[in-house]
Image 1 (cartoon, rainbow, N blue to C red):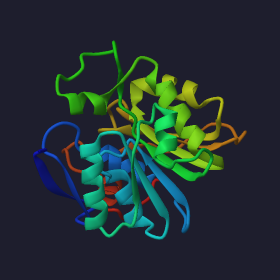
Image 2: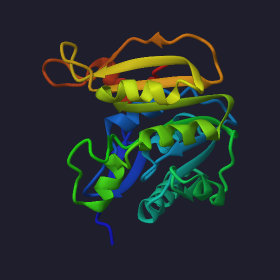
Image 3: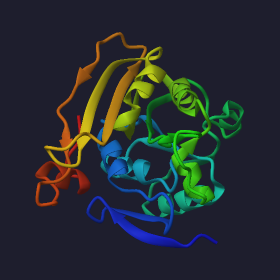
Length: 246
């Protein structure tokens, strides 16, 4: 039995039950959900969904789209189903391993169907850093060696032509992410996320269109906090679900 907490996101608009320990939804999920201009009727995949924070916040912003949550951990997928029901989101939760295309097919996911793929891949790969001894936390934070390429390749495979991929990752993995999507994604927009205006970026958001030949652009950065440690006005609006990052 997983020990859980019940938390509020987007200023109380989204209720999220999630594990009390290990990887927990926070600012990364808020920013990722805010970076997608989803339209009514779109098919949206939340890949590596965990308890569903990203997709649920996207659904709160745009309720009249079709949301599918993909998570390999059955316990987390169960919490994701609970959260979808609690928030009134009629979504499908697929228990599948993103790195196993047979697993994706068996869960009902077909190639080139999605209008949007939203993903926050595990930040590390085996051998890059010390991995947590907690199995669930390790799975949320670490991929097998070479796993980032495979993860993003699977995401691109699920997108229809002209579909949109949006991901968030650590700033030090930018080159790896750009290399992984370079053969399938164009019109890439990068947006860096800084804890304060005078501090280096800690995250980046990357969005792009499958099959596009448009050049890469750099969007204005997100500054999360003032020097006093409070949310900036933009950050506050994003965390309350009152602004988009597009």
